[in-house]
Length: 335
Image (spheres, rainbow, N blue to C red):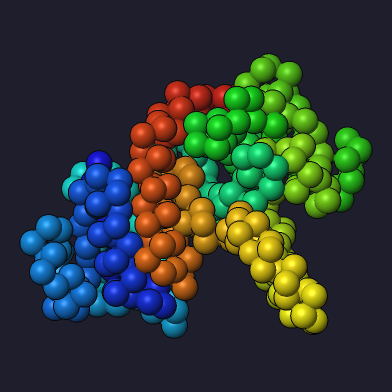
């Protein structure tokens, strides 16, 4: 297994990217390629420089760059070079903590979508239920058609089955109510397509779900457009942070509470880890012909390692192959 790391992407690059990549090499047994400014990468590697492949790339894609043109304008950027290496078969997956928009555009233009897939989707796994719940899409496609949502449902279902351990993933359409008639034109059209796919036994469609259902443990894949999905994702992250902040405040209110905190320290650490979005490592771009994992921009070495673990699992699971085999069912009939 060969994983390519965009060593210059992210707030803590290249030091934390390099540390995470080395840990992945040691613990996951993967071959590592680090792409970026060679002298800075070597400075982070030290005596371990001979153990990894370094591909020199002089340019950087920053948050100020236009995401839609960054990889086309900056041919020698670490992200661009990493994606080209993946396209050319010099690796099995790419991990980057760089600009989300630039990475998605670059993956689409360079690595390409799976033939027949209209749009790639961002699909984070949120901390809920026994296996987590996939949210697809969460920002890649602000405006969607019913066909996009149908494809998201299939792709999310394959991912949940192969990587999340859901034997028969329950797929729900995010809506303002659970009744079949709820929502606007997009939701009505998507509901009909998903219901048909469910009746044919191709996905386990359970109908409309509301925001309160997302964390109930009763749904595994939540399908929505990128605008609504991104709002839900960011709100979830904000609520988790505020909840942990308030909980910490409660335990520091008195000596009695501090003693209780000491007793519960290990249990609280487990809960905090379970709710930490960084533990997943990153977000998969599902629908791209080869695995591309977007790590958080603030990723440390642990988060980069988790992203590499996710990339390895993605490759081994064969999700892309499942999508290719079922592409004829994922398009509007008659096309």
